[in-house]
Length: 432
Image 1 (tube, rainbow, N blue to C red):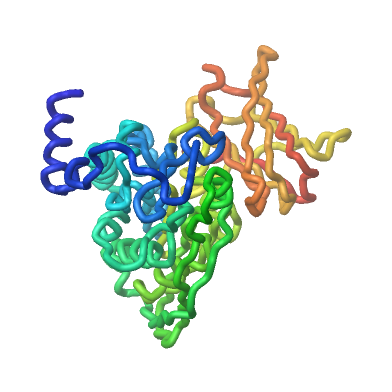
Image 2: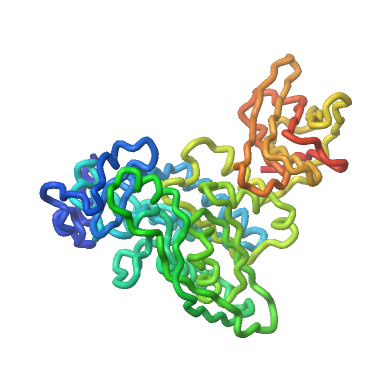
């Protein structure tokens, strides 16, 4: 560790006052309050029992580092700029892992796995700081949760946000939206949120953990709320598109409702349960709906541990291309007489000195998979594949980079889907 990193770690511990010792995490491991054995050895949802029936996953809750590479920060800055160029402000809202938001419930067992709350918090805040310095409106959703004294922001036996967690997250996101220049010019409605009781949420995580415990675990229960519009202002209408994961998808959490109340703006929600960081946002940004009616604000809610750029650069490249959508270069397309799932495209007319993206529009065909077989004049072939999550609403629209193939570029591409192309399918080239 460098001297600078050591200093930041010590400074964070001093400012937060939440080092391992001050949290009371030292000492021998306590016996399970639910007769649990072998939780940490489970093949799925390996866990540690915390205080008062709160459970933490070994992965990713007890990781000190959730990488945010410089390339990812640059991509998010580029996406921010691409959306802003056509009137949409991006709010990047990574939901922190439970251990960062609920440190009071960590148990001595967490230190056995090397978890250091001060270090993990420093890494989290440093990533947000770097994003903000790059021009990304990145929101700290952790701050208010750490100090919360009311209902828990996360379920005890499930990694998702409760209604209270959604309310706190919406407050932080709402403050970021209100700081967007010009947002005050949009019509501000009024929304009212009222309690409707409580509900138990179906939780696979709880069921898996229960197998290792003799006593019944706490149910995944939350207070419930309902948000309704009470006043509609005249004038320009602002729309917030909330694209997210299971955190904002849980109906009982009322995430979108709390966000509407915070901002006074209509919130349209897009989510894919279990879809991780990209499923919802790729569905939305590649859709014709987005291109025809872009929102005033796009909120990207995603789990902190599933940050963009962890695997490859295709998903971010596709989002940036969709945000820009400079796809005005027509290409000659021929249908394969023997295979209605394949289009053959001539690329020989493209300027090889320019970087292009390829835009495939299947004309309404519900495709979830596209395989692109690029060919050059020497008869060589290279393949690229784009997959959609099984729970995504398939738009049949794909963006693929044409860089990194050959120095002379590709002369053709065969695009094959998992379904037949629509009647008016087309392929175009986009300027990057």
